[in-house]
Image (tube, rainbow, N blue to C red; front, side):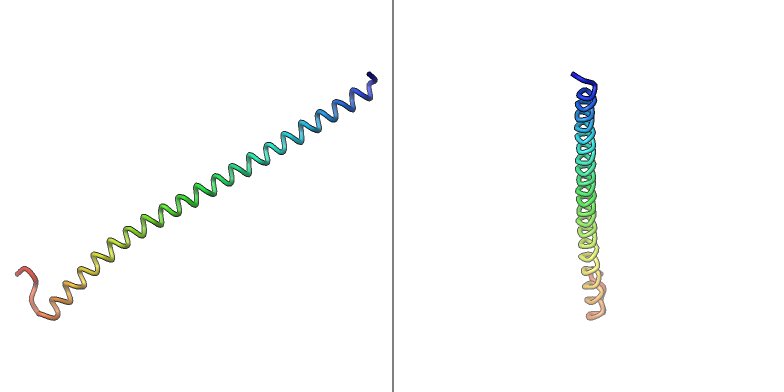
Length: 81
């Protein structure tokens, strides 16, 4: 084998390794970013569900309170007295 063949083989192997390494890094980074976006979307969804449940309880209580006040205003009497 001549020196030029050795250099040629070394360049081909090194270039292949470099391409493989960069591709692996790029794919891993994309997967990590995708996983992070999915997790963030999941947390936003869970937060919105919790907010909706709390607002629903608040609106139910407010509705009962308004109904009682309406009853008091219509009859002039406080319930339970």
